[in-house]
Amino acid sequence: MNDLVKEDKIMIEDMKEADLSEVLKIEDQSFSDPWTCNMFKAELSNPFSNIWLSRNGNGAIMGYICFWIIEDEAHILNLAVDPLYRGKGVGSMLLSASLDYWGRKGIKVVYLEVRESNITARKLYDKFDFKIMMRRPKYYRKPVEDAFIMGLEMK
Image 1 (cartoon, helix red, strand yellow):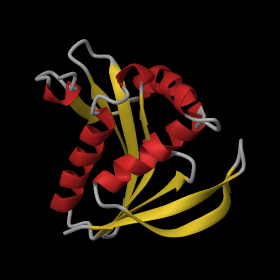
Image 2: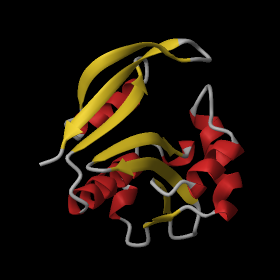
Image 3: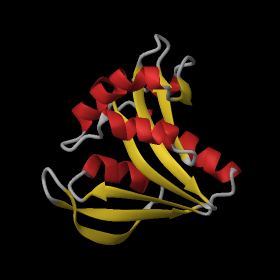
């Protein structure tokens, strides 16, 4: 089975500014309207923002998740996996670790936006029981597309 999550040396850690160039490469390969360097820097200095990386045993960044915690809510802002590691459980590992953390923090609900056409991401969120709450018309640009607002009530 080619499931990286089962490897012993996978690490999840906080992103540092030194990781920006590698993260930006993954971001550019993942999105038609990627975050800029300044957007990541703003999140790194934001007191209620977290960016976590998953690294393999060689130290390479396989993916990342950026989220806010505000009161008893979590908001996923960004989740991406390096194309080399897609389909191998990295996104699930990042989301699962985040859900465990949010559960310990007393988070009651998690929200995110996802492109209507991003079937891969929607399947990941469906796997974790996120539900579509509403459609936000023309939320995305490059190309213009609706977003689904998804939510998960924590147990």
